[in-house]
Amino acid sequence: MHISMNWKPVTFDWNHTRAFLVTAEEGTLSAAAKALDMTQPTLSRQVAALEAELGVTLFERVGQRLVLTDSGAGLLEHARSMSNQALLFSLAASGQSQQIEGLVVVSVGELDAVYRLPKIIAKLRRVEPGISVEIIVTNEPSDLKRREADIAVRNFRPTQNDLIVKKLGDENIWLYGTPSYLAQIPKFSDIAELTDIQIIGFDQSNLISELLNKQGWQLSKHNFQVMTSFQPLQLELCKEGLGTLFFPEDLGDKEIGLARAFEPMGPVMQLPVWLVCHQELRTSLRVRRVFDFIAKELSHSI
Image 1 (cartoon, rainbow, N blue to C red):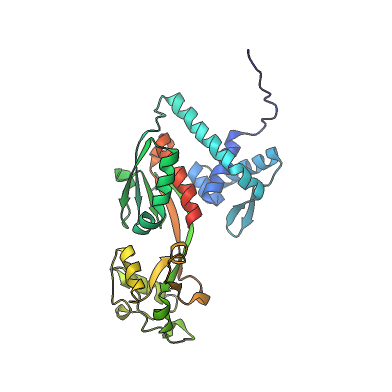
Image 2 (image 1 turned 135 degrees about the vertical axis):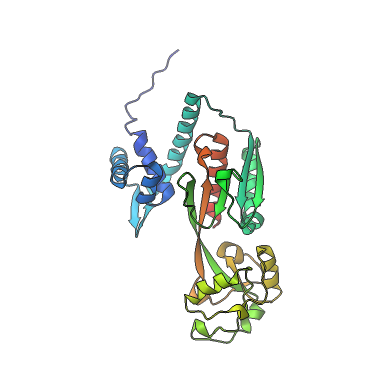
């Protein structure tokens, strides 16, 4: 028995929906237009056409960024689902494998590996037991073009045009220390007066001092008497009262025995968080599943 579907309510264009999805993912019209290889005016017209077709406002402009309205946020997951189904359709049409099972290699830094990724991977394995995950832990950028990893989490946007990138947000970086160490720091009226503060830094602490000195600090090698590039060790050294350390807000605030230093001044810096993948994202459903899953879960963490 054939049941006819009423097609009349389906009045929107998939290309317009894709324009909405990519704009929401990228955050700006210019970035979305670049990702879709079209002009910004064309993209803007497609988003506006979808708003007219659906009778809702999808975005509000806040500064240079576009922010989803409640209606837009409610439709975003449906658009993502449509995108996944479109990928399946494309794979089937081209005869490529739709196999989910297999290995995906993910490259992350030490903090993500130790403090954020375990719960994300555990959840992924529960919902996708057929996907195996290899995790490369390094603070150095993995070369996705040479297939050192399928997916990478980075604090900078890669410049290669043949990589797929998605910004997950910005993480606030604070200086943290033990209350007893912070209590020893003399009161000051200008950040330049903090000449004796100790910061547990990386091996290249001169780069950090240059960055902070541009903000008014007066730091030198004297302020970095204990150094290690291994960030979990930095945390333990800080807990021993050897100085302060740079740490993401979502992780540092959970550490018992540590407190934010100079809180009225605000975060020391903000670092962008990018999820990066090579072009296989467009043809491998397995890589796409892991990419989308990490993007969703990690964006809730930072």
